[in-house]
Image: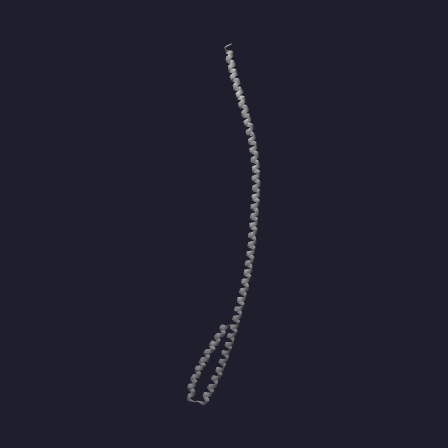
Length: 178
């Protein structure tokens, strides 16, 4: 056994060295694990803080964006109201201009109608005078001139025909006037 003791001692020493080495590695691994866990906790904490900061920035950006949208909507609404007011004013102005134009045309038509009525009245009076003249000429011719009276009578008949045509024109003008 004496020969086996040194061998066992050597093996024990090797095992102790291995165990010491494993303990050393275990200690190193434990240190590294603690450092990694510390770094992980620190990273998680920084991540959470960054998330909170990002959430706050996002809320602020949303708030600013919503305010911009509200301001833009208010501006567009005011512009729309202004445009509607301008369109209404333009419509009223157009109505007043159209009324004035129609009133002017009505006055012009009334004046033309009055002028045509006066002309028709004058033509009627002229016809009456011509009829009186025809009657007078007929009587004069019948009583004073013989053969010449017949020639003149033909002229008087033509005048009567002209008078009838004037009467037809007068009648048509009166119809058109109405």
